[in-house]
Length: 103
Image (cartoon, rainbow, N blue to C red; front, side, top):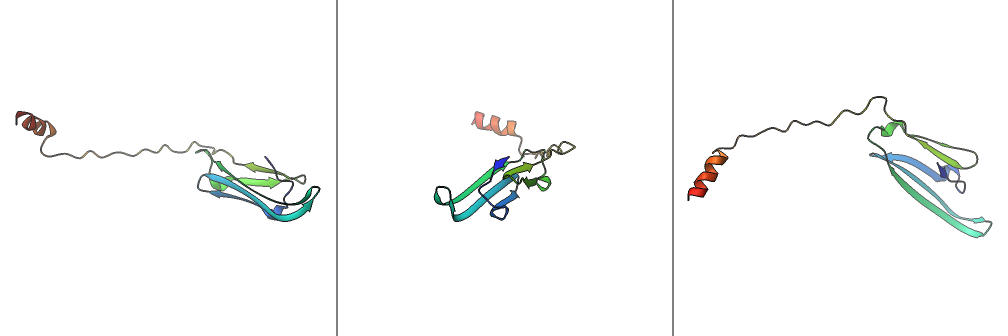
């Protein structure tokens, strides 16, 4: 949850980039109770492996609270398994080591 009460909805952007949620808000100089001020922020937050970026949602309350939801997958992500092939070296490594030792 983020307090973005100083920004209009059209001044806030929420997007996913790879496995990150990026939140950006910016408004040009405007008058407030202290004078004139411009504001800008960017937040970048990592999504866990069990969250699909396309499922991220955001909502903005009337009092300026931005809520980001990133539901976990119902099933755990598949394990990343890769079979590493074994290559055969010729000549045999033991023979090479022994011939180097005997030399």
